[in-house]
Image 1 (tube, rainbow, N blue to C red):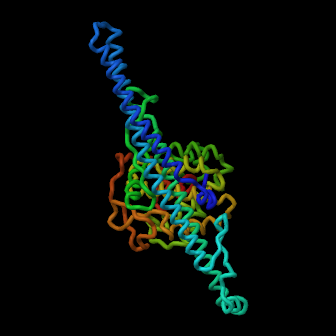
Image 2 (image 1 turned 180 degrees about the vertical axis):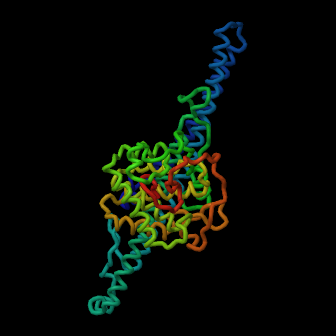
Image 3 (image 1 turned 90 degrees about the horizontal axis):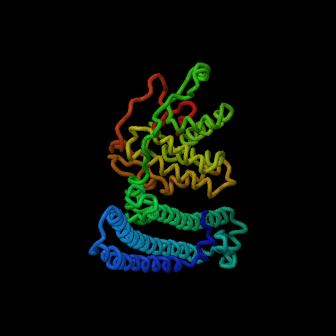
Length: 417
């Protein structure tokens, strides 16, 4: 759920710091429990006369149990550190929002409890009040100033929401079960998960590392899969098997609307951001994000996330391009969720604003890394240089490439963006 201006301004951030302290105490207690277990249970029986199959089994279980106390200590300590870092970042972002409000009020604005900015006419002097009523140019300049401050306040609110989403993701990773260890899905996860404040260089490195997806288990298939439909359409594309399954769920009647969304994303991107090849640049960033926003509006965020992850799960996708597309897809879904009543044109405006404001990522010249979309201009983007995380697989012969991740090519159902 998105935090509103009112939510942020009324939030007591010290509660998060209190929770961090509780996790720190828990970590200490798990360490004490491990020492007690090793001394009074495992250690005591280790020097006993007990022998046989049961003793061997006990030793195996005791080793796991002792290890789990240690893993629990590490997990609690890691979560405590994560929460402390999150607390400090949220406090700073809330403070930045309060500073924007104070600056707006000093500039003759009024900011209400919902974050709406208006001109405070009581702060105008007599000459300014007269000019506002009789000079259209002066009145227009005041309106522009109100709009600028509204944008600044909304950007500060969005910064808090970005941090909130990043904290949630980090916490989910921190409590994820280890799975492959001796204690299985019920074990503690000792792996430390760092919180990286959104919008930093460290965040770019995190995006490049975390926003990756493995190849679809079913590989690449031709679509439509039904030979009668292939013969009737005279055109087919390659998609991942998961994409094909989800497109089948839409049915023949649903494919025209799906393809219409894709065409809309391409056309609108071309109208707002010129591009030579539609790859790795601001046109590409807008297209993926707007495509996701439109699909979220029609199909919901959950379906859209599942489909677009499947769409990027093509073998041979360069790491920078995959991270760029997955991240920008997520931004588009978030925009649509935050503005459920927005029209397609309004969503396009919001996505364009996000691209120009640096909320998206692009691939800078030289590749090998990502850059925020306000850090480089259209001429400063380039081609990816990092290899794919996995080996390239053979394409399915006899089909048109669906466009894949960031190919900038249009084609039929499933080509996406």
